Image (tube, rainbow, N blue to C red; front, side, top):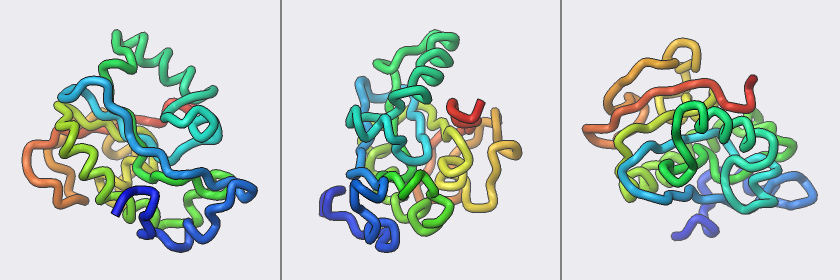
Length: 166
């Protein structure tokens, strides 16, 4: 089954109508394996228009943060914890989607094998660390093998606020 055929979160997919604000799924993009994986929450409107992660105003904020850190998109793997944008961006109305896409995230990470996984924002943090996790309680702390997933050993993870939060 490919991502276009995925039906793991049926209540969200039932609303999969461009007029309703749900966009086709986006899969992560890696430019060079083994670096840093950045996991965000869900595609934004601008991502759907561009067909890739972190575009528009949030993307400009992200690029500025990465430039301050001495990084470029070419050094990162960018993905979302949820592959579809919920109607009007209200992913909180579809809690099963937060965890349904976990298999896709695991598949992407196994293929990319990042040295570091950074979850950016509440939804991404919950998808990696579990539904009780908060950005404030886990921000800036390096951990190995997040407790939420059966991802195996050796994953180094941390989290931060979403670039669009500020």
